[in-house]
Amino acid sequence: METPPERKPITSYDQINLSDWDFWARPMAEREHAFELLRERETPVFFEEPELSFAPRGQGYHAIVRHADIIEISRNPDVFCSGDGGATNIADMPPEFAEYFGSMINMDDPRHARLRRIVSRAFTPKMIQKFEEDVQAAAVAIVDDLLETGPGCDFVTEVAARLPLKIICDMMGIPEKDYRFVFDRSNIILGASDPEYVPAGDMDSVVAAMLNAGLELQQLVQDLAAHRAENPTGDLTSSLVSANLDGERLTLQELGSFFILLVVAGNETTRNAISQGLLMLTRNPDQKARWLTDIDGHAPKAVEEIVRLAAPVNYMRRKVTRDFEMNGTLYKQGDKTVLYYWSANRDRAVFADPYRFDITRDPNPHVGFGGPGPHFCLGAHLARREITVMFRELLHRVPEIQAGRPKRLFSSFINGIKHLPCDF
Image 1 (cartoon, rainbow, N blue to C red):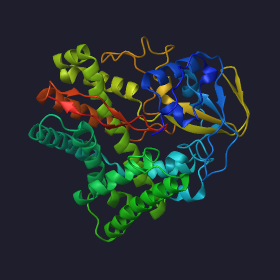
Image 2: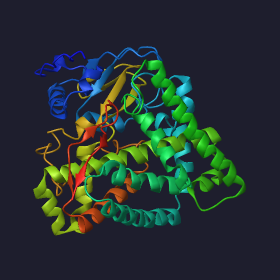
Image 3: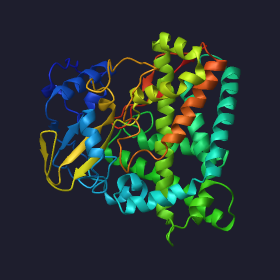
């Protein structure tokens, strides 16, 4: 087997290429150092886009790595838009991708606002109360199973992934027999660059796997929606099918894309926050000991700190709609800006000792749920609830639990952990 070339240490910003897959294979400490160098620059660094077989190569992008810049861009969605080519990818989204992944996260107002209002209308107080109660019951059952399984298991698959997956599927009315189906397809969509989920091959085969996973998830919820239209229950699918805002309803395509967004954003990201939270507590026993002194009292700030450092979504993209000067840089119409939330959450200008895990950090203006503005995470409340309840159960019932060495997802988009052995 050919030995891979040895990577040289990064000592200056001009050695960094965020479009190179080799960069994202570097150890976490090296990547942290690289973003530190980028943040020290007075102006954002401009990178060429990677070559892709399924999309034309764009003109490049500004890497937005500082907290202040991301906040300002997020507050100006009319200038920095999400809908022209999509927000979840650096390359412009091809039409065949938009059919499955063209959810409201990749839209601008007024269409974005319309969809968000319809979806928000379906989240009634009664439904919110129910899923909060369901989170508690699910967390108890998961820890019951963990104790029965015993130490040495994979914390990701046995604990962290199970809670958000169950809650989202139950909310939508997806039966338990389909949980694994949903789990596997969401892994393919967000882990397409990782050979564990999509076997290494040419780019066309990777694209085909993503599109097929999107098609299968969309078909699953559309079939359910057709049944719920005739046989409504109290689940979210029933509410979305019947939701009517000024005479407008979700189309089946919009419903399918929303479900994919909900599964991907609500499942993968919360799973990774919980997994990384256990890793942080293991590596910072003083903070774990502090949390144990008052589990409920410390929980709100501890959860925010977990989300800050975990930053499960590395970036989102925006495109400039008109010439605009911001913090000393002129952005021209048509320019792409890629907002690296993971980097902003480590900005020394905002966070004292930013690499330190501190469950009492206050204030904590992280952008782990995105920046302020219309695209702030719709599921932030649910994510906070799930993380809070999961760690409350773990700290009360398995306080000695420890994480082993993580196996990280190979991805530039998601800061994920695929597998995490645990002991207790």
